[in-house]
Length: 363
Ligand code: GLY
Figure 1: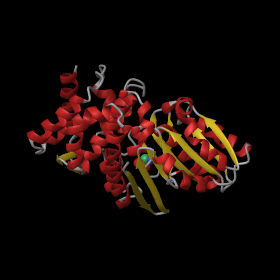
Figure 2 (figure 1 turned 180 degrees about the vertical axis):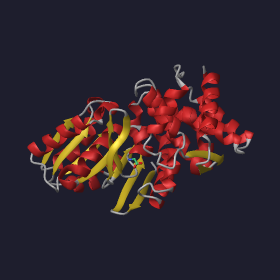
Figure 3 (figure 1 turned 45 degrees about the horizontal axis):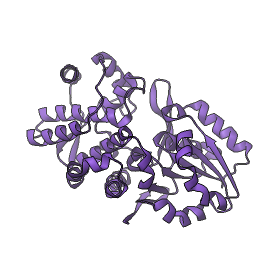
Figure 4 (figure 1 turned 90 degrees about the vertical axis):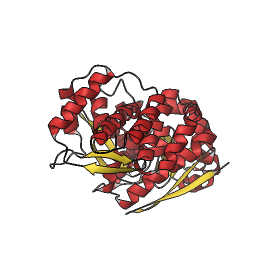
C-alpha cells in the first residue's frame, strides 16, 4: 500500500501529514509517542465515535488519562457555548499546558478542537485525525481554526497548526456518497487552482472516488493535500496567495449562509461557486474548451438542486464574508486548467447581473 509522508513548514514549526489506506495503524507509533503518559482529550462527534472509536484503542492505552469529549455533529459544534464547555471540561479533568487534544472527526470538529487547543492556557498541542474527505484534503491542513458567529461562519479564530495530521483513507469507507462528493469538490477546486494532472485523474476516476475506494482515494487525497500545503507554505497567514484557496467560496459561503447551513453541504455549495467563477472567468478570456471541461466534470457530481434564492440575499451574505476587506470583493477566477488569478476590478453590477442570469438558468 502506498503511503504519502508530507510536511507543512509554517512559522511555528513543521507539521508531518501522513496520508494513506491504513496509515493510522502504521502511524500509531508516532501518535503513540505523542500521547505517551499525557492527559489526552479526544474531541469528536457521536457518529464518528460510533463508527471508528475502536481505531484509537491502542493510543488510549498509552495515555496517562483518556477523556473523550463529545460535541454536536457538523457546524453546530462550532459555537462559543460548545468551546466554553470544552475549556471547562478540560480544566475540570486536570488539563495542563502539556496535555494533548486529539481532533477526531470532520472539518467542524477539527476547526473547533484547534480553536479550543489554541486558546486553552494560551495554546496547547493538538493533532488532527480527520475522518471525512473534506477534512483530509482541506480543513485539517493549514492551521486556521475557528468557531462561528450567528451570522458569519468562521469569524472568530486563530492560527494554530496541529502537531501532526494523520489522514487514513480507510476511514472514508463509511462516508455517504454525498459526503464524498462534498470532499471531492474541494479536490476539484485544488485541481483547477494548481494541478492539471489532478484534474485529469478526477475526470478518469470520478466513479471510483465517489464510491469511497481507499486505494483510489489515497493518491488523490495526497495530491490535493500537497497543493494546499504548497500554497499555505508560501502564505501562512493569508495575506495574499492563500486567497487563491477561496476559488468557488465567495458564492459558496453565501449559498451556505443563505440556506442556513442546512440544505447544501460545504463542497456542494462550492460546486455552485465554481460554476459561477467559470462564468465570470469566461467573460475575461477563459477558453470555452476549459470552461466546458470544468462544467462537464461538475455535472458528473450530480449536485442537489439549488432552491430558489434572491440575488440581493446572496449579495448581502457575500458582503459579510470575512475574506472581503475594505478594498472590496476579490474573485478567484480560473485562467486555464491548473491556474487562477485574483481579480478585484469586477463591478458590483456586473456580478449582480451575472448572478441573476446564473440563478435563472439553474431554476
Ligand atoms: N484549517 C484549514 C486551513 O487552515 O485552511
